[in-house]
Length: 192
Length: 318
Image (cartoon, rainbow over all chains, first blue to last red; front, top):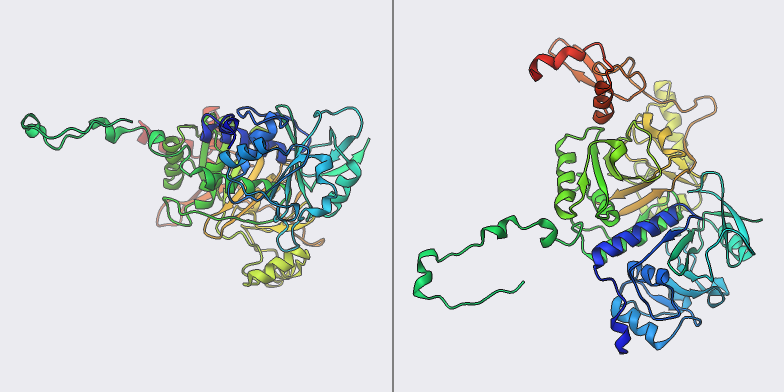
């Protein structure tokens, strides 16, 4: 195990993970809103926000898919030490970490079944930035959104296809630096 | 904590069973993990909550734990609350609208002890409200979480006892059975007689049990600014309604949904728009109607609103 793997976790686990979860809960409940996370220092190139989400949600019960763009022995040691999550292929993953190209084709991940739509992967997607204007800016409507919200998405066309699977589908947690946003399958997406 | 192990000597014999008096007054937050549950349990509940929000109205199975209270007293709600609490929260607990019943007082003090959070009885001061069978009269805001205690989460359970079948019915949005039940209400009683736990459709897909809230409260679930979370401990289900969701009470074109409310105004604060409890006053059948929401009622009385029996308890209060 790398010595660095023993650094960068929560200093006060119960409180920091509770605070982090509340931000993620708000992000998932209100798609398009951006929240700030702090408290983890994962090995690069992983962002602080992605590290915090991993520490908050992963444990030995959650098979984790690690995308090639963030994968490294250091990261795997860090994840193993702090969460104990077993590493898995895309088809068995409960949670996935990586950037968008790591996740295509999306069909590799389970989207749940008609009886159990919750048995689908949550994809923690590292973004260059979280913004509302620029390329791939989308207009979001649906549950959790009062009128509409805007957010730049990595691949609107694929995400629209995912939303069309509702109530099946993948759920996305978008991270960049210390920012986090979420895009559940229930959100309707229009490219602006 | 470091403990010194000393061998007993003659000097100690006088105060042999030496107890540290402080030990019995340990701050509960030192003896329990924050908010009582262990971290792995909280992570499991948190993952279920995120899936519940992503699929509004769908019941997510979760590995409900034994809690230090009996089933039926809010074990599901307590677990959801424990998984959501942060030290900055201010917690309110209501039981049928009241802040001062045994269940509400116990759960409030449970979280004050195990999480060290502030508690309140005022709806607008609370950041997290756990409720048994009511939605507060005061409109909820964006910063708030509303956690419902749910006894039977499956709205179809009394119509179809098999879980395998109700799962299929939800998967296919096959809710004809529920409409037949409401129709039978009409054929027997002339109106839809279901008065509480009135089924709702969430965002046009899943039919959901709103927990046994009076149907008077159903319209408050729709387009609500707060996040609504539902926990059923014994039945091991979690479900949720994100903010600003469209929640529709089931009905028929010719028998539209109707909020049910006792006629008249609150005898203490005069409110004519709140949900009223009926109180039997004597053996002759005298009744009075008072607000079910105690915080709403007392706030109105402080503001000077009066009902037709406002002076009833004045002499007792001295």
